[in-house]
Image (cartoon, rainbow, N blue to C red; front, side, top):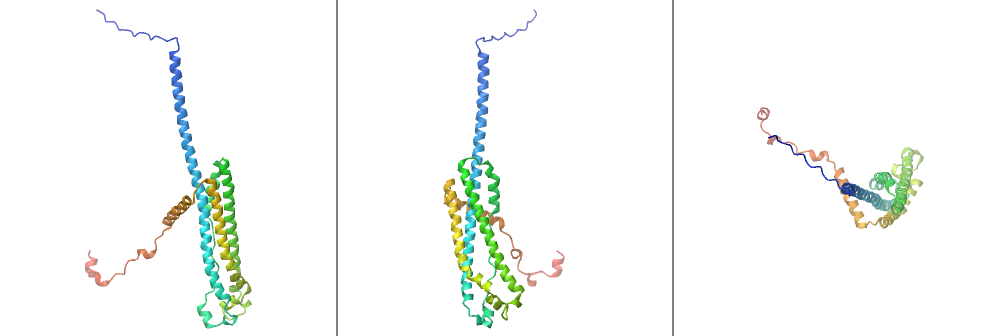
Length: 274
């Protein structure tokens, strides 16, 4: 008998809209999945932006604090210079040529410079375009004030150093224009050089004042951005530790071993034939 292939039954179509309902549920499920994925992505992106902003804020404040620390250091140096200047300015003029003065007295040279971290400023400028809220707008303006003040302090200090060098270089290059039989005597008899020594006392106080002003700037910034002093100082200390590790360099002395002792070496023939 011939075998017949069974033909599957034609599925019943629900004219009441079951197919449309299925399509609608599929559409809604896909849409919800897209929205959830997009929303999660947005949340992650916003979190990253928030973290990036906070890191930039800490870099700005850290730059201000490190600059204040440099000013503190310069103030301590100037206090030491001021002590030496006081001794020098109170030495009688007729003692400038004495052997004791020539042998024991060291004159004061040009103080060191002061710089602030340009890297933090660059990162700050390159990221501020992404900050749109009014909260960040206030901080952006205030950070601009901080960087302007640090730049101004650096420039004024450089001008002071240039003035100091100009005076000392002029004495060194034209000793014939100054009275005195020795270079030390010529420096100590020069009016402009003595004025520079006299100004070191106020300079030390000025650097202390500037350091406190920079920290006042940071206190305003911390209040704006809700950052504690402990968090800021930890950031500064952690970055100082990293910078120190990166900048550690080995010296030749570390590689030098004790010199060879002939008594500790084998006979030349034995060593040569090894």
